[in-house]
Image (cartoon, rainbow over all chains, first blue to last red; front, top):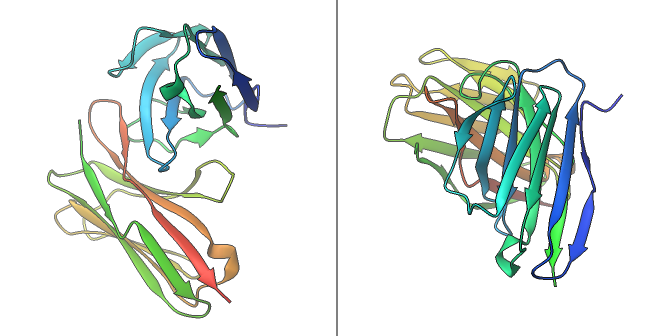
Length: 114
Length: 110
C-alpha cells in the first residue's frame, strides 16, 4: 500500500549510459514532481506535471526528459549520464499544484555514476 | 525563483535541550510548509502554515509563521534521539512551486 513508489531504489552505472527512473502514486493526486537532492541535501525542483501536462520545467539539461503517461505515473529518462548527475532523485505528488499543497515523497533513487 | 534562507545549517543538541531553526524570505509567502527527512530517508510533510502570525503545535514541536508572512520558525523542546534528521522549510509561491530551504541537520548527543 505504498503511496509514492519509485524504481529502482539504487542505480549504479557508467558515464555516458542512458537510464530511466519510474514513479507511481496511488494517492489519487493530480500533480507529480521530480526533485534532485545533492550531497549537501539541497532539494531542487526539476519538473512538475499536472494532469499529464508539464507545468514546471526548471533549468535542467535537456539530457533529462520527463514523461507522464497518466496522472498516476511520472518517469524520468536521462541520456548520456555525467558524473555530476550523481544524486538522489525524489518523486513526489500532491493534490493540485505545488505551491499550496503538501507533497508526498517517494523513497528516492540513489544514482551513482562511475 | 523564490529564495528561502534557512538557518542554522547544522544544529548539535544535547538530549533534553531545546532548539530553534529559522526560515526567512525577502518576499511575502502564500504559505510555508515544514518537512523532516531522517538519515537515509525521504522528506516527510510535518505541517503547513497559512495565516499571518499562525502558531501550531505537534507534541514537542512548535511552528510559527511571522506576522508579515516572510519568516517562520520551528522550535523543538526537550530534544530526543528520535528528532535526528534534517528539517526543511518550504515556501509556497504563486507559480506552482514549493521552494525548499537548505535544511537544518540536527544531531543529538545522548
